[in-house]
Image 1 (cartoon, rainbow, N blue to C red):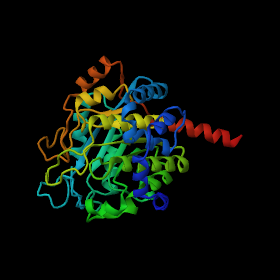
Image 2 (image 1 turned 90 degrees about the vertical axis):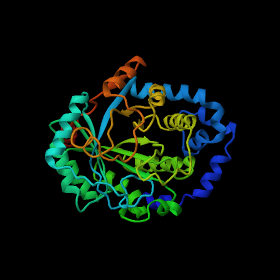
Image 3 (image 1 turned 135 degrees about the horizontal axis):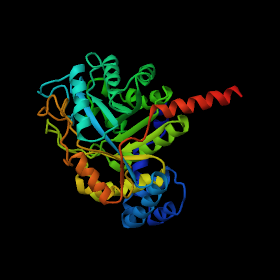
Image 4 (image 1 turned 180 degrees about the horizontal axis):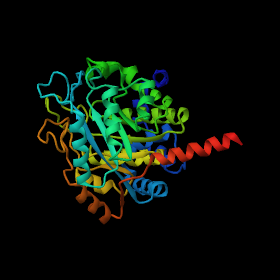
Length: 383
């Protein structure tokens, strides 16, 4: 499990190593065709700030070699804001006085129909708060079943599950799982997650192993920028990514760097502010570090940032997102988990991307591909 590997990596020593990187370290990393985590630390270090232009050119080169000029589009749907956790930065935390909603099957299907009217979305992300008693695996499985007639690619962002539960949801059409570790700083993790299942650091960080063991096709990772030193946190995520790629090599991976935005509780202020230039730096660094990883930007980011980065490393974007349960049809004025920054419609984002020379891709995966691959494997094994 990755928690065992993480015990061998010192947060303090890693931070020290990042900030001791020199311009020579950056130049050496830029000259390598394949980078290791030490090179990644050089590319996200303060010493690399002078090299953003060559980093951007290299990031663009690798992105277009691997992904062409495409942009995969998805949309999130929050089906409940019921949550038993006390995350100090989140609008859904249990102590926040707000109306709690768990959409009914009929309401969920109405949301699907409303989303299909916004644009030709085929990639859906189903999001819940963490309340396994009221919105657990059977509820999520029902939502997946209802989604299959409307969408070809289904992902979830829910509480970490058991291996067998992930495997069960795969049989209900699940293609991918997104989970944010929030921070890899174990010593301070419970400062931000004092109560609830999310307070269990090892359970959360090892959830990615359980996804891999269950054969989940796509795994999404992320840290919440604003809690701890972002350079150290994304380095720990780079270690985690390499570990997962080694152990679950059939799986596709994506990363995200969501910058903290105001939530409904308003009381928590970010400890760390990542500038737009630093967001670009970590994006370029991640692409240079891993040519194949999917890099995703959500509507947390402003339109101008998303447009600028669309040709320089980002390969997946959400569009016309609502972060309240049932926000597309059932409860359009409900409380949000966080505020959206890019408020353009899906049609407007599509036009903007095409003007930038990008081709929005609304469907890039189909379950039939897996069936074909499986039949080929079976035939090969029989020979």
